[in-house]
Length: 387
Ligand code: NAD
Image: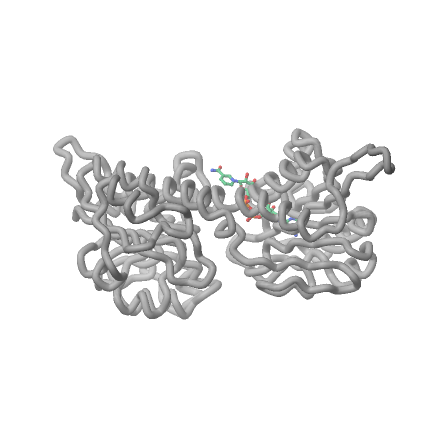
């Protein structure tokens, strides 16, 4: 196995690419033959000529590329049509999102194609370089603030001008994971007053270190062991959270919601009753809109106006910053390839999917006609492989 195929993304709005001329150069240096589908990097400002200069061969279409390789690199989950063109027994490194889009995942499984699912990469120190959820969430958090600033009919910073003093914007952020932290940092850089809340009280220090104020929610669950992962909130917690944030949300010019619970529908945090108390012209950006939404009434791809509040539901925010999203995702993928085709003394390139390896075992959704990941099996109504 020495050939890699970098596919051009076919889904609407997907501007990212799974490789850059830089990562292609690294693959070529290791001895891989790299095929890049024509136009694959165009939307991320990388021309076919840039890839050829790094040693890639440009292939005209997806089907031709797939016939020549066992390892396909992509960003978005393959479509049903793409799955039908892929070689049985080949492996695709890409997002899979089986819970969100079981139809596409089922088609891939049905075609006998293996899946290394980028969203399943364990959140461990060892796997950090491969963690595309983090690299892309960082971009989403940044862009959410910029979208809010553009939609808001007000300044973000405090300004003292001859014509009068402008008060700084007040921003409230729900969910202080990777996206939320970057949203806090970006809103602070623009001069806003920022408050944030999260079900994990241990993020308080991180919020404060970025200059934000943490909205504490008193809860019986406080005594629980801290975890980097959120659990679904109880009804009691949700009630207390709503009480704690209502005054801040009512005073806010901007609310950004980033709350997610791995493997579950995003929690509903901003109900209609809370929106009704917000200021006329305030803006909410719902980063979880594709996972069911944190905000009542948010719609994918739309700006919905409710009680005078503009609710922005732009999907796939990382794809709206295509060049840097591509640069970071492509490096995540390159580290995956280095991990599954490990360096050997004799420089032989061999795909080695060692299921004893924590990163590989955690990230493989399908392999050799088996489903290896329990939540994926559940989403597709299939049996998970025993070993
Ligand atoms: P995520 O996208 O799954 O969720 C975003 C945030 O929403 C989380 O902070 C979560 O606690 C919060 N949330 C969930 N339900 C909520 C509710 N009802 N109310 C308020 N907030 C709610 O999270 P993420 O960005 O993927 O990161 C989760 C954590 O994992 C972070 O602490 C991050 O720093 C950590 N992390 C660690 C590593 C690593 O160690 N390699 C890598 C990535 C992330």
